[in-house]
Length: 116
Length: 116
Image (cartoon, rainbow over all chains, first blue to last red; front, side, top):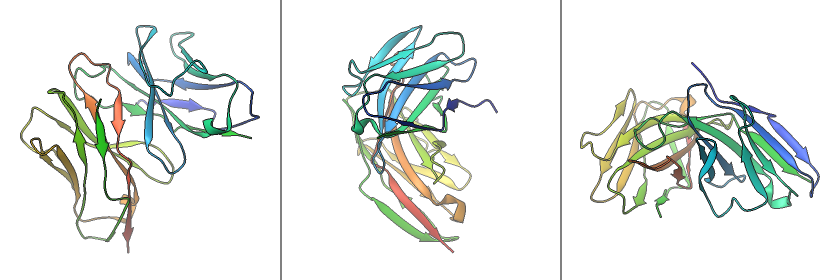
């Protein structure tokens, strides 16, 4: 079964540095998402991406964050000038039809981001 | 905006017994979907079961079933014949339907431990 893949599995970065988290969604999916889960807390929506642009974003997704689909396969989340509170697990997800059907989002295994 | 509430931070059950996890939600949407996701210690997000709001029949997936009470905005998950592999964090999630881009709103999660 096709999977969403995320790299790296664990990223350790110094505070203030930039980090790029990478995702390869399932190939025929059109809607892409990033979620964040701070340790012990719930999963929070960050951003959705469709047709090469951001379709929706949460209040967490401020100017520090950006997303890009630089080629036909990768979907990246960039965090500029990282802060301690950015430490979390970041999940990428994708699905084919957005909210138009009950098709679930397929999640990657996550990238654990640790800011020192 | 939607909210999802899981009022049970932790639950435990003996192997082979039945357990029910609670979830309530609040929305003004008329077209939406509800999901239960499982997150084992490996931190993957795995779909357990889904329910369309317009369907009166409760969804069933092998040992997993839901009790969907639309008027009460309640969506509980019943796990029958619990197995050790069911030990995980369980998240209830809401997804708006129709023309939405499909972002998911998650509850706080319930940690389920299955004891031998």
